[in-house]
Structure formats: structure tokens, C-alpha cells
Image (cartoon, rainbow, N blue to C red):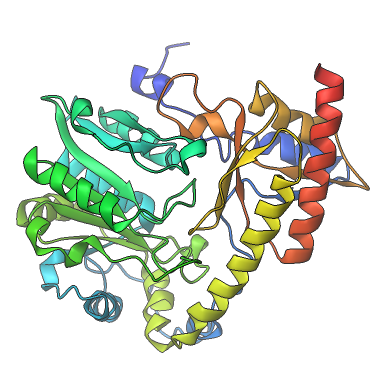
Length: 397
């Protein structure tokens, strides 16, 4: 059989989804699987959004403008204005989820062979898109012992091929909210080295121990080099709608992004009908959501803190928890949980940590946990995880 491309062969598998066949096998055996491997919230999508589908009356679901439909674009312009970022219409482009926004940002800012600096560990799909586009991710090393904060100096990581820095704030998968000083150091770095700053602000509203993070769009000194990738997936529990956007005041970047948008014709029409109803979601919606996730964060953090040999840092935002386990191979541990272990008919699925690192061999003893289930289910899932960890160590050692 003729072999496919080296690009495809070399692309990393998703640590979030690669073990799904093992979860399917567990369910087929009658085992309930608590899915903490993926950031799929169980909080209801706002009713006004769901009703928009029932009220859709057009006889044809047609192509729309490549940059997005007017009602949804209008909402987004108002949203960013409320953050302190007044935009021109061509500064914003609607995408098919945050994932397409990331791929458009990479493709518009980087040429094949160019490098991008990203704090390690990172959202695994950054690695996938960089691989697909022929870019190299240079990891900015962070450690759980230091709360995943950035190193004091980053200049030594910059090479002649470095073209951008990506900052996810609040961060997936660590849950860190970067300090004002850390953001200022990143802004200084990109200005001194003439780099783009790609900011993933998908979890902007999910901050639990302080004020909502300031958007990088509000710093005028980096206006010409800032590209924001964003999504409604987590903000409104709209993951399946696949709706997001890319925002930049850099006209060259946005002109390139529009070419990519035209090549894929248009973002999803029905998803925009749903998402445009965000304008009718009351502001107090986020207060309730934050309170709920704060409680879930505490359940997971306190549960893990009580397990011997587990090292964790308390997340400050997003809805993920990285944990270092007393195992040598977390992927083998996840397979064990799905293939061999159950407690009272249930098991827990988490994501192996190695796939969230760009640095070779790092994170093999870590996992990422998404606290996206209700408190009762989370408590049961964490009890199952603790029991499974004990059983695994007894079986594998």
C-alpha cells in the first residue's frame, strides 16, 4: 500500500481523544465512564440559544459571508467593545470554532519552518496545527512546583526563526492566570524581538480568585502585532456549535485570514443563528457559571491533594487541573483504568499529560483533568480515580 504524507505520519495524536476506543470498550462491557478527559461542560446551553434553532424559518440553509453573518458579527463587536477594544469591521472574522481561529492565526503569521514560543504544558491542538502547517513549537518551560508561572527571562529561547509567542490566559491545561507582570514581560518580549503575539482568550470569563483577565486587545503598544483567537464553545456551553473568531488590527494578518476563510467558503450558518442570541443572555449568567466551576475546582483540587504521591497546583482559571501522579507512564495508567479497572460499575477517564508538552519526554507522569461534571459526579469520579491509582500501583509495581 502506498504510504501517505510524512506530515500526516509525524502529526501528534490527540491526548484528549486517542484513547476513546478504550472508553468505548469499557461502556460495551457495561462500565460507566466518567469523562474528565475532555473539556465538554455539562452546564446547560442558555435556553434562548437553543430556542433559536426551533425558530429558524428560512427555507434554505445557505452559504453566508466568509467573514461571518451580520447579526453574530454585531454581537462580537459589542462584546469586544465592552472589554475596552473598539474594532473596525475588518478586524474580526468568524471561524468554525476556536480551532480554525488557531489554524488561521498560525497560517497568517508564520511561514513553514518558522518557530512559535508557547508555555509548556499547552493545549495539545497547538502542536497539531503547528505540525500540519510546518511550524516548530518552542516550549517555554514551566513547572508545577512554581505554579506554572513563566521563567524570568525568555530571550534565550528566541532564534532568527522565531516569529510569534502564544499565550493562553487563563491557561488550558494548567488553569494558571498569568500575573500583570508576566503579561508585561511577554508584551516587552514581542516588541523587542519584533514578534507576533497570539492570545488565546477562550477562558476569559473563567477566573475564580480575582478579576477577569484583561484582553491583550486593550494594549495599544502591541496593537499591530496582536492576534486574538476566541470561541463561544466554553463560554456558553456551545462546543458542538463550532463557532469562534479571530481578531486583529493588523491588516496584513486579517487579509490573509480572509483568504483562508474564503477558501473554506463560510462559517456554519445555523451555529451563527444560535450564537447571535448571546446578546440576549443576561450578564449574571456568568456569575452562576463561575460559582459552579469554582466549587468543582475545589472538589478536584482537594481530592487530589489528599492522595499520597500526587502533586498539584490549585487552578486559578479555566476548568482544568494538571496533576503529577506516582506513576511512570500516565498513558498506561489511563488504559488500565479503561481496560481493567472499575469500582461499583464505574471508571474514570482522564487525559495523559505527555501529549500536552512540546518538550520530549516531559509530562509522562502527569494527567489533565477537566472538571466539567456536576459536583456529585466529580466526587464519585475522583474516588474512583484514587482507588484505581492504588490498584494500578499494586498491579504494575
